Length: 306
Image (cartoon, rainbow, N blue to C red; front, side, top):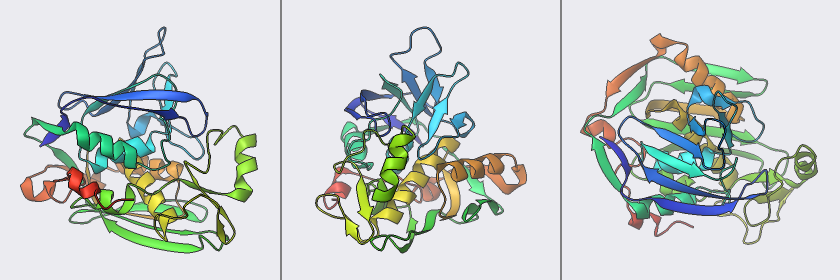
């Protein structure tokens, strides 16, 4: 079944990259709409921006979508992950600026709010995309692929010279609320050595030790330390879930990423949709829906989350 929210829910904060205050309201929507952003501060141009893979523009360190008038919304990945991870298929996001608020750097506050708002069924039919053959892209040492699977899993590996990060690997099956248990609270991260470079490029201007994990070789500078020993790779997986949600429908398959970022994952979706033999659209029965993110999640799933 397709779902939407029972009631609206609002959030406010600052943009991670722009550093400006912004507020959003996530509203119920009709079946088949998908996730759509509406810029309430835009009056002369089209304010509607669908959260779709073919509306994603290349932007470093964030996922940005734009419409034909050039109206954009950036850093959508954490909210998109929360929507996918709590099983919300249709919603309208009102936003009064160009960037989704970073909150604490994870998707946890978004997930809490969405679960509190509740979900309701808007259609008996949910279409999913089943991967039939492997599709892969690469960019230097980074790569990503989608391969056939009976459910939806994300597998990811990273390697950084900072000893507090090092090599990390994880595989998560996104069924049974595992997004909430294993990924939702994991925060965006950066290396101290990259901060000045990002600021010079106009990025991470709103980043603080309260909304990002900052590593400096073997030290974690963020107050309170890590929420998981491998929080860095888990956050990369959170980003993947949000970026794959721009497919517009749930994916049945395994994503495998090696050092992949937002641009590589979007290239993977573009290659997938350009390769019709690699997938089939299927109607999700009850057994399949139980394997998808968000099935059966409730506020109790958040009790033990950081």
